[in-house]
Length: 385
Image (cartoon, rainbow, N blue to C red; front, side, top):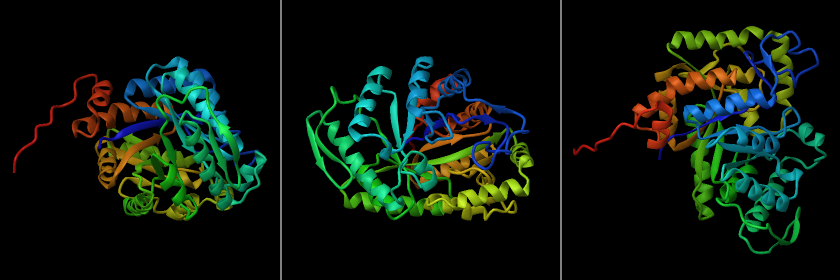
């Protein structure tokens, strides 16, 4: 099992700050310098950099605070050649047969560069903006049915499904997708686990300390075994990697300079209203305090003071960040979905610093290693004992 690396497209905006101008009030972010709009030219720069540096795919988020992921990424596919797009979407907001059709069309238009990230939704206020009024557990129940229909329709024959949320007769696409997109799925609640076990190709967790990540892996693996399935695992993290550890931590600390106590308090209040168990676990890592944000060696919870979703970052020298990736990989994590502020510059810091470290350790596939480093991957010779 090799390490598979992915980057992030900031379709809600980017910059040299953690302040989220979209979420916590009309005054936040107005005087913050270095904010960048997510226009196609800037996003294309990030996508091209990710492709050049050796990332396999880029995750594109979903929500009312960002651009639509389907439309944005199919446009960016015209600016890239190999890069895949991990498109996040919310299952309850469109027909599962239509979603199956969109995915099949996407695969043909891009020659197989689509991956899907299923976001059931842990924030009722955000869901209501889309006109969705189901509660947390019923949303996962609906996601279960949704993915059953999608996979059924992809089989290439008329598909019938009769459930609580969907009643489909003869669901069909003109042609099944080729290849069938891998489905990434996250969720830390008891309602989420069985759905992941039945449908996910890759179970994606946010960046908790290794012991907690191992607990999640063991939990989902055991549920999948009961379903007669095998699930692979991924982790969502930010990164701040520099030539020295001191420089990396200095950069992390500078990101806190924009955050006064009122900004943090407003963010924590908003995030605390989320129904997401995963979001609650992120908040528990720092408790809303600037103190002791390094919750595990090189694992920093500062992002989660004001940002929802993934709230931790790998911080350190290139070798230290590679150490932590190797540690998570040893637990069974294969996919690393990474990001950093700003995303263009941090892609280069990671790509030119950490990726060669991972290649030298034999953790990358030969193709990824050669693309990223510009030279053939090292030959690994097995030694007898």
